[in-house]
Structure formats: structure tokens, C-alpha cells
Length: 197
Image 1 (tube, rainbow, N blue to C red):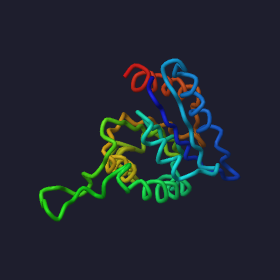
Image 2 (image 1 turned 120 degrees about the vertical axis):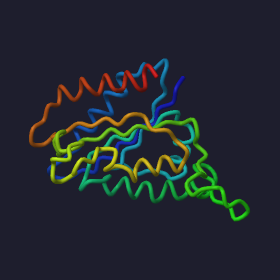
Image 3 (image 1 turned 90 degrees about the vertical axis):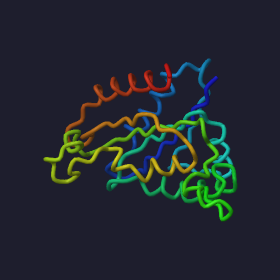
Image 4 (image 1 turned 45 degrees about the vertical axis):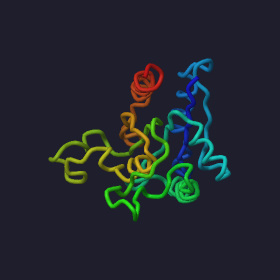
């Protein structure tokens, strides 16, 4: 049995109710066979208990962060979640400090994570089109990738000693949506990197 913890980071706004991100979460739950995978979910719009959330991170083999990209970053409610849950987990459960030691100067910053062997995956929904990334001719991202944009989020999980699975992205979901194609690609992504991993 593999334990999957899904964090739905969607923050609800009048123009964005969260149906797409909720649909991606539901697809994960439907793709992964219940006899092989145990799934827990936390949604940012709901109240959460810090201790229970730390425990979910310890329980999980894989953490999937499903969220929209808000102003080139995570929604504020997920940042609040990180500030509380991850800060409280620095007591040795998620990490034992930042890894450095006054007794051993060779120990580097960021090496105190205690979640080695666990994996995480970012699944993101963008208003930006796919061709805005990985292309130096594009003015805004200037050749940067989705993972470059989300380096701080990757570093948060790396700080805990976790290993990244390939990122999934659905692009142009507001101005030029291709939702059925996104679902097909997403299903294959989950099958390749979680179901058959």
C-alpha cells in the first residue's frame, strides 16, 4: 500500500471557483486503485490542524501539490499553510534544523531534512501559455522553465530531504483552455510517475 497525500492549494476568488483544480484532485483519486493506494487530502479553503498536517507529511510516500499559479507563485493560503505547518515541523519531524552544525563546518545549509525516501509532485494550472516558457525569444520568462519559476517551492520540499517527481502543468486555462487534452496528459502523467513508479 502506497500513501498519497494531496494538497489542493486553490484559493477561491469570484472569477475562479476552483473547479479545475478540484477536478485534477478527483482524477488522482479515481486513477489510483484503492486496494494499492491510501489517499488523504487537505484543501486550503477548509480549516486544518497543524499537528494533523505534519502527521500527513510523515505518513505520505508521495505528496502531490495541486494548485493554480497566482501571480507567479503559490496562492497565499498555501504560503500561510507552509508558514505554520512547515515551521512547526522543524522540531525534528520534517527536519532537524537547517542541517548546519557549529561542531562540523562541513555540514551545509538545507541538509537537515528527515523525509528522505519520500517524493513530491507539483501539478499546476496556468493562465500563461506553454510557449511562454523555455523560450529565450519570449520576453516575460526569458527562457525560464516552470520549474525555474517554482524553485522556491521545490526548495521547500528539498529542505525536508524529499525528491521531486516531474512537474505537470496545464497551460492557458482561462484564455485558451484545452481541458480534455490536459486531463488526458494528466492521467498519463499520474500513471507514469505514481501508479507505475
